Amino acid sequence: MNLKSMIPAYIGLNLFCSAILFFMLLEGYLAYGAVLAFNEASKIILVIILASISLTLFGVLLTYLTPEKYIDEMNKSYQDSSVLEIISFMLLAALFEELLFRGIIQNVLFIIVDHRWLAILLTSFLFVAFHVQYYKKPLMLLNITVPSLVFGWCYFYTDNLLVPIIVHFILNVSMTLLFKFNKITLKA
Image (tube, rainbow, N blue to C red; front, side, top):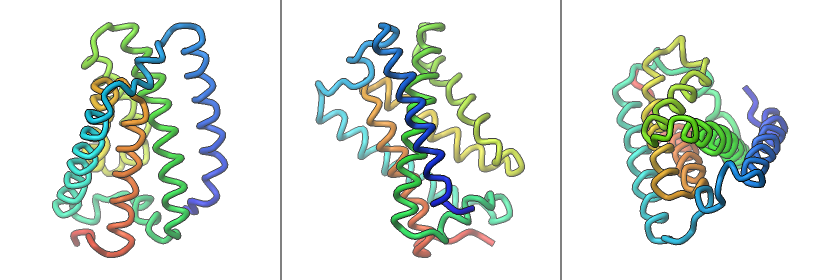
């Protein structure tokens, strides 16, 4: 799969999700303070650092424990792209997924169920369902579920949608670059 060819589609998806989120803010379904709060910068930075390091270590550990036959082929193809293509694609993918799942879906579910952890769990279930390519490799679903729960928690804990976007981006880029430059390898 060529990452460069997927970039225009992700730009369009990001614009669509941004428009929906903007509408939700304009219509009062969401408060600006619940989407982009910056009142505790040190907390935001600490969450980004701890979540990024923890999820990357989780990804590395899972890589070492998971035999190669259980890794999805699409994940292997990313490392053949240039570093600029990887960074561009991972930024757009993280932005799209977080705008859609944390910005829109998790917020709507929270409005409906009025319970943060239930909204996070339901959103994570939908996030896993979205990643259909992993159904053939069920162990890979663990690699989607745990980060999704962390992204959801990061968002509600900081009230800043940029936090899960940044953590998601760092996780995806770090794992892909670790594979690309053979700092971690798949278990035979």
